[in-house]
Length: 235
Ligand code: UDP
Image: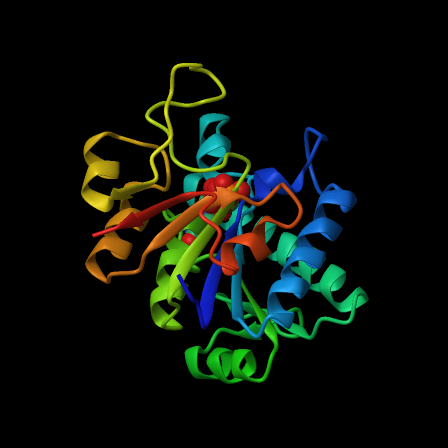
């Protein structure tokens, strides 16, 4: 696999590292270093980062929050994480910008496909925050949408597991890893790779997803160098 442009999806949950909540600075800086390394390979990079380390609308609704307001809180959480990543990238000299799906200048620039592509072509990392801008979606859907829009060659889903398994490997020791799998099989088997909406969007628009462990420093570069360390989802 050779990629010219990628959409990297990072989960908010991973960003909290060993802590139970918020942003682990060590993990944040490791992500920034890996992203800078990837950019120096000449790959154009768009990033979507989740907000689960701060707030999730669905969890909030379970505690009595209004669902739409809860989702809006979740989208704001992704903006917080995006700003943190932007700051960490800036600190190590990696040019980048934050775009927001909801207008909130001067915190971030309002999302625009063509401006994003232009920035990426000039070596800037573009962070797409606030998901899709709409409630009832997730940042998985946000990354499918942005990945398709910016015409990325692949969505790299950085997780804390090294690929897709037949069952949750953290719970089931007999689980085995897929080298590659089709979108329809992911959906049919109910595998929790991404939510169905996000998976279906990738399927319909032919955006391959590559799931790998981003928490091991150096892995992003390994994937971009063609090392087969994760699972590929395709049609
Ligand atoms: N969210 C939303 N619309 C979007 C993206 C995100 O409403 O387009 C909200 C939703 O409440 C979600 C929260 O933001 O629970 C955080 O995103 P997500 O759960 O995807 O974060 P992750 O699990 O990747 O950390």
